[in-house]
Image 1 (cartoon, rainbow, N blue to C red):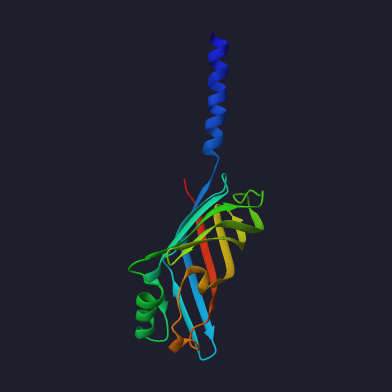
Image 2: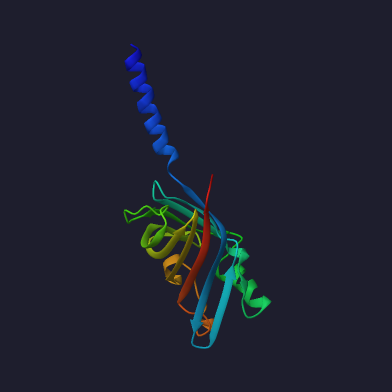
Length: 184
């Protein structure tokens, strides 16, 4: 009976160690910017309020930024129109992206990686499946992640009134830079 208990205890310890050996990294510092380069106007805004986690063992991630946290714009009125007329931040307060890392790499190991993040990008209350490339540098429990991609406004039911058609791009360019730290 004793060897059976010892064997079961050993299996439980191995399983528990496997669960505990899945490092989770949390965003400590981040900047997400968007750039709308239309024929008659360039609009840039950024937020430093991006939050998120990456579980390197399960290769899962989840990120969120509040729409109203974007600053920059060309004027306070432009920011107001962004929040009230286009993004409707009172109705759709957050932008989220969650899913899995496609590549079979150990992102917790020191090194440089280019990975594909596959998941649901939810903007303006509309979710779309996306694959977004990211460059990752892991060193000493810290992970630097950077990514650039485009988002078509029509994909997320963001309407552009005809009167400002030449001042808003139909597709915005997104840049994300973040530092994540391994959680104890």
